[in-house]
Image 1 (tube, rainbow over the protein chains, first blue to last red):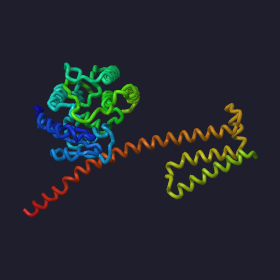
Image 2: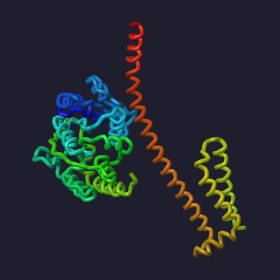
Image 3: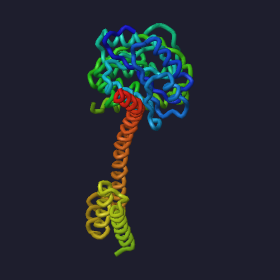
Image 4: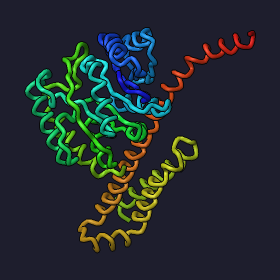
Length: 235
Length: 125
């Protein structure tokens, strides 16, 4: 990867991802050899920790499962404590190809943005969500775009790169309920610049989405509510 | 004195004594006993001084004064439960921070034997 002088950390939150985490670590090593890797094992009860450790990466293990938000935050705390300039969130289930990391980091550095979100929908075909998920993603994106006064196409994407300012903020405050969307609202309130970059994503190689189609509508209402509560928060 | 008044006085007295006893035995922190003590005291005063209850009830337009007791008790319980929700949220956040620091500490601990080994080697030349 071509990012001279910038210390880049790849944060991989993992909860019971023994089926995919080894391959994802290899993928990141191959495509982003200069980047540090931190796996945040969020209280997995399978072999996630031992597989990640055997690959020689640093693993931070939560004593119990605390959710993706807390896991991400632990990663950002680590990034802050160790003086990283850029932190890239990569899911451990294999849906974020590591060869796309460079696109995120480059977009972040070239535009001096505070956070860059990898969007599945900016760059041509590749990823096709299920019908219900597609509708949910579109509605969120419209609402969040309106709230943030920035056109965003993929606010639920967890594939993103953060600069130093964002690392500082997110290590202190990370939303827990619907972290992907809510963190954007908080960062916007903070006055940080948010950008998108087109990335390719893959169907998960292991594990499954935390949201089933049947729960989508209920989920959507809850997230929209959370967004409006976030708008009232003091940041 | 009506039987209802007697029951109300005994009830709020028991509540008051029970709270004091819990604090005395260290089962209830002083910090969390304040709202409870206040509710017991207010209920006790309203039960003993029937005139206060009647006056306030008349002023508020409550036809049956003892129902004011229920209203006051309900409001206190509501406040106490809300207070606990806030306390739980604060505890949740503190608990998360503890777990995260533990994760970071466990990671640092892994390096200690290696560092100690290296220091020992350096010492021996």
